[in-house]
Length: 300
Length: 316
Image (cartoon, rainbow over all chains, first blue to last red; front, side, top):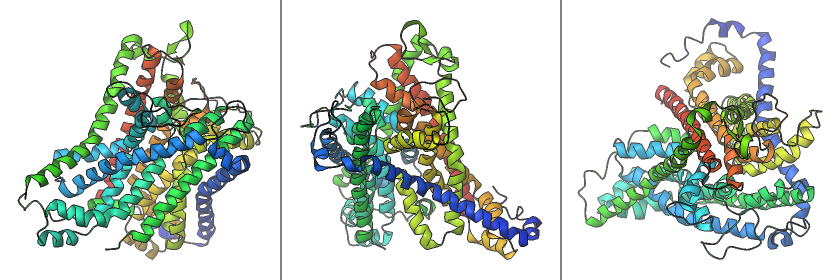
């Protein structure tokens, strides 16, 4: 790429800038507008489709009833919603300390050029691109069976999802920490604070809004994941709520999967209703993230 | 994303701490605790590799690498004589579905990126980009529902196509919409990283906006745009639920997009739910396919990283 295309910018460009070019330009602009609209049209169609199919089924009863295999009118997502909320909390308990600590280590302590920190960085980059179903295999072989042998319980699901979204938390937290100007650190150190005091009392508070946003985004990705939970053997149908972290569980995406795997349109409508509940939860979380970002993010 | 690329290669912060002596053992302990947390991600990778390889090795003891990699019949869950572990059809279907997806995602993804970076006003851009990101935040099970209950019956059958209720076309098209935002946002980052002076030079010579976009900016950002495409392909290869819900449950060597197709990820999810003994080759097949998928995405990711580095070196 040493030849930055000055050379390619040859005579042709100049010659063509004539009247015929106008129409071509217009067509090109229209084609681009069409491209952009594809994403939006599909998003709109998707939301509309789900709304038309499922809106009439969303009710308080739907959220507070256990699922049913026999009666699509009385089926609900109680166990799945509770499972998803448990998963979210457990997942947060795992990813916040580990993710933030990793980010602090890489930004504040690691020598950028050392082999170890390069290894960690490349590793995180690669992990972010591993398909979620492969994390399911990890969860199945290491957490559900194998060394940890927890079985397909809440804790196993939360750990699997946590490992899956950990790269997101690390990457976003690093950006937030990096955005805290070094003058803040210099000031703190000059006043006699230790490195850790500087990080704990100056850097992390300054980076908090960014970190919180990242955690919320990671959690909203985690609760939308279906594949890893399917692979670790979590229930797709459960007429019970998990009571503790070592109980079996189901979650919203799994309940949706169960509903829409049924050929019966009534059950599929219940699936659409469950999608509305899940999307509503995600909208609330994302709105929270945007609020945090706009309200607390500091411009240094 | 711009912040990332700018920050990552910005001037390194002066190393404030290194010149200080450690105050106490407490400070050192904290350092090691943080390092331990950072090693969790390395352990994750190690765990993934081990969990895949352990069973894969056992599987190859049963089935044989040659039969797996060159066999053209994939019926691992069928009993008795008709059981066969040739992965070729499954890999083929995975690539075929990815191909259909990319046919949608590449033109519209790059079109969106050019629009965002070269045509949209900053205000429009500020609105459009987040909405595109919302699209990539929709859980894939929702896309699966959309493919199954809308694209197949309403659009494809509406157009008079004779498709099955599970078919590759619907799953592939929706897969394309799933990766479109990935391609659009990463390509947009690459295009906006092209220095304004190149555009100004071309405009100064009388080039139109289209000529500037297509002949100057796009070639200048080519490696970044290719990275975006490879990343999109890697997402599509690894997607599970859309294919599981709308694509179907079998993998055959066929070019017919109107029949059911399964990809590797969907096989893993389907097989791990099936009632199979955890000691036989059926169980091992999950891991052997997992290894194949892992290697494929790793290679795609490595290619993408290489291309990204290339464009960073040129302009930053």
